[in-house]
Image (cartoon, rainbow, N blue to C red):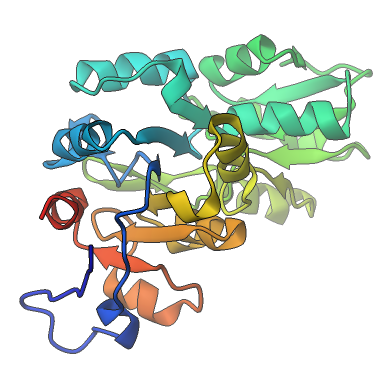
Length: 284
């Protein structure tokens, strides 16, 4: 299957790589970002269900790899099921799960201060991490997720704890999270704010690191040549695909624009307007 992008109404911003050809017929494992890629907040995008049906039809597999740590896997299953998406826990790998794996591998069985949503804290505990949300002299690491329940009290507590000489981890570097009216600050923006106050920068987990991609490929036995990452952000989704050495497709339904892609040295393998256009190409 060949692809040569040809957008209507695009005059001056098309760059050479938009016209690259890429055979997608060998792709069987589709790793999908969520916010801005298959839905926006609570509104599923046109073409999402058709695309997922296509993956099932060819005997492939779709996994949602999301940097958004504000919800647990169970929360996500409920959310996408309500949208009509067939999925269970095995269809997800989140930055929270990746962060838990990192803590276990690098730090061991230590007490971790967690700042995030109730679902985030619960998910860490279910992943086997010792978690506290209170000041404690035995804290050996600080971990922060995308917090839709953020308040000033939490920021003050984090600012105090970041004076400790312990590892500081953030689930993801995303600056914004797409919502119905535009964007709200994501974990990366809060981390920048805390850096201005404390001078501390976190270790980021999740995309653009290849951790989630490599984990899923290994778990289900797919090669790099059979794997594709699909998302709307160059600096997380596309960068993670490049770092993992797999095909990457950028959709213009979320944060990235043609200008964004043109200005960034990290180029996706292919670019599509949205998931409907990607499905139409795959289903030709």
